[in-house]
Length: 447
Length: 58
Image 1 (tube, rainbow over the protein chains, first blue to last red):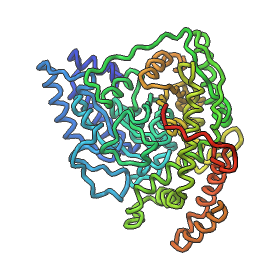
Image 2: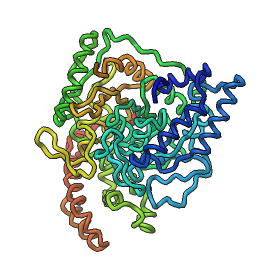
Image 3: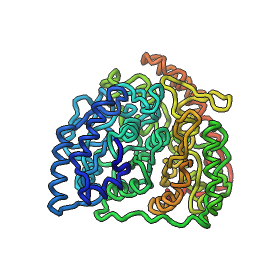
Image 4: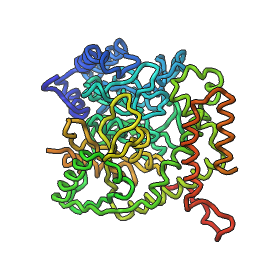
């Protein structure tokens, strides 16, 4: 596709100006799906007829002056965890093969009201319990830039659909990093808002304490527009980037920087130098109990997930993929006293992140310590050390699910092999974070 | 229940349920549980009164 809007925001302006139609844009997205999804496997359900009908309706409304706002006529995809009335919500599992949503999730309803076009439901790591999108009843999603690699997960199909121009944005979920990890692996912007900001009604749950919903898209401006729609703001306003001079960011080096691919570290350091040249103040900070985060996360996420799945683990265990079933079964063994310990640890880590943010405009660190992982890999080599895929992919993101702070990943160049690198900005409040991210965004992308 | 006692109980139960594949996962979980219990923020009733758990606010 050439000479056409790249971001959702650009497309929105073109639609409002009627220099392009929703029908034409939707048709191009569907053509991309038709041409490439067999090799990428980003979608579980393609809603071609519904999308065309929505697009025609959008064009008629826009032409008659009934413009709904910046999402009107925009083709987007939804991770197949979100109920969309009349369509299956499979969660990429045979467990839910008979399910058809009776009503929209709150997220889908808000997007529908805003005039978005739903091109389809995207593939994911089964029940969102994984970071590679390899364990799915519908097969793995392949990275659009390198089919031997995972696009990350669990919202891998969502990320792939946006990268491969099958949608202008997607909505994902994030329990330990499942928006940010695939967004970083695919060179996208991915926002995990603050805890509780976006309703989870009609979303298949994984962990009540850690689940978040957010957008995956091509710019901070796009993320802001989508975030406002998801939050139910009916008149979204463009984000205002704050000034760079004097912006103060903390870099939590201990623990978070101990295992980093050399290319990821290099792109991050180069971006930091660009920020310093622009008079951004960068200071090293310590998050005191960072090394406790993996055990805290495990002892919250797994028992909460197991509680959701206890009935179906008994009634239809063989409908799960083996890896996901085993992790859920593991969660059933965690003692209540250890869950309570982990919840206390959550309070401690939250105070630690608050302390690191105190007096600063945000924290800055890489999003994913390694580039997109090879499919089938159980471990990945990081500076000579073999690290399990799960733990290394979650290492930089899961803490902010525990603490609930909003966090956004921004594209930060590519590795020498051309694989995307992401940088993560963390804040205290989502609106302020987006303002900071909008300022940083052009400098984080390498020249 | 110590972590070792928990692990032996869990391994036995997994074997009885025909889930021997859980063995390495449970052994890994035991290490994580030991780490969790060793953290310095855990309540120790023999120590000075602990800070009350904070309400989860940001």
